[in-house]
Length: 428
Image (tube, rainbow, N blue to C red):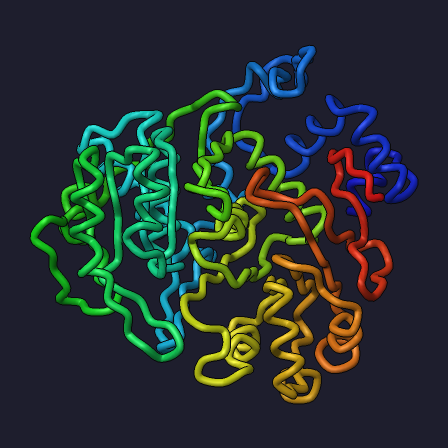
């Protein structure tokens, strides 16, 4: 953040925020140039219109988000980029070269299934490496990705996927939570019965290596003909859709929210590199399911040259400090959680400063609900005295943050530090 301001001759946080609003063309072009976007920005940054929703950013740009995410600001092919952990103790890793190869195989398999740009590809999956690989494979060819987590029942899945008419569905045979094995196969047939547009259903044997379903193709079987295929990404307009997310469903059927590729990528790069201080070589984890927008936020992390740590399971199994154990084992530099987790950890009587010192942890992010002042104090007294505690807030509506952290500013108990760059936010 300091280097960004200094290079642009901006005096401080207030000056930078004011400039980002007054000079949107210069600001967003600076984010594109300085945060490692791969693609052609084209002439012009903002194409103004009388209405906000008709305004276009980078109207002549061509890019594919996968190029930026896999490149990781020039990261080496043998750098670890994905670590997949679960509460059973299983651990898998992928280097950037291995991730590229997996994404290439998925993209080729989707093309072989007749999937084209604009088609929808959906996953009903836990937070594991395959989910990330499917998303990137779909994005590589311009397909629109949408996900739910496996704890959703049949109605919850259909309320969402029934609206978007997916052509491919990737599902897991089950998942674990709190030490319990939870089967998904009994729900899969009713879901497929109600999704007639699905031409290919793929089963990931997450719990049982021998899991099969007569209506699905196994993950390895699906990809086997395409192993070794080169990665071919399709250059797309800035406004090409990347994700479909959903409102909570508290006021009826969840509403579909379509997010464009260029806008989400730039927002995430800005938030990761400037507001969260994520750097090449960092190890980043956000505790989330694939049904929360923080999964989409986390999926962009490799674009900044960092490794992403995926975790599937309960944060309190087998003990209240299980997530902290993982943070130490993976030497996390960034850990993101919900405020309710931190409140629960505090109430459990844990004293992580003594039991779980994390000298490498620079940033602890909290969102999902307000973080109360008492928990701010507990974190600095009993958990990590020199961490940047970033309370952030945004939403599914923008798949990013309106307000959040700034590693150059003080942290005050019970307060969010300030508005995100480029976001015209006032708090009354």
